[in-house]
Image 1 (cartoon, one colour):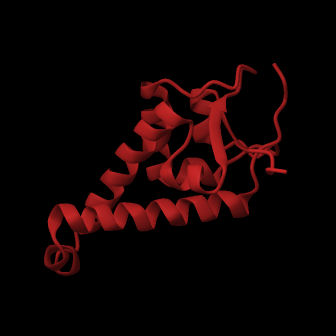
Image 2 (cartoon, one colour):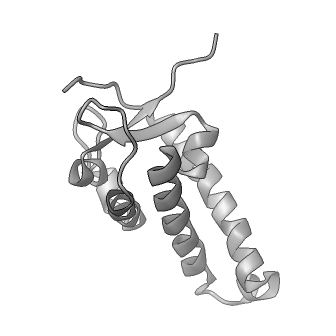
Length: 128
């Protein structure tokens, strides 16, 4: 197994912000702007959209919408560089939604959500 350098927390935070904005817009389309504004539980729709979007795109494309936009990828930590399975991506997304797993991490930058499914978030090399 090759040790990979994990992506910076700044890039991860930016990716999460992009994901959250996109998930909020999708949730507004689903429930309507008035419901989103007036119903305090509409935040759970945003969270649900994030979990589903993140899991599907992570398994299919190697990262959530925000990660793809910020040139981050979630790959298996076994050295193959392949995306996660759909089940592993779903478990990872649910753990991120619980908030604590990403905040508890090893010195190499891998949080409990990555350790649980054997993944690592890496930055793609800059284009030249």
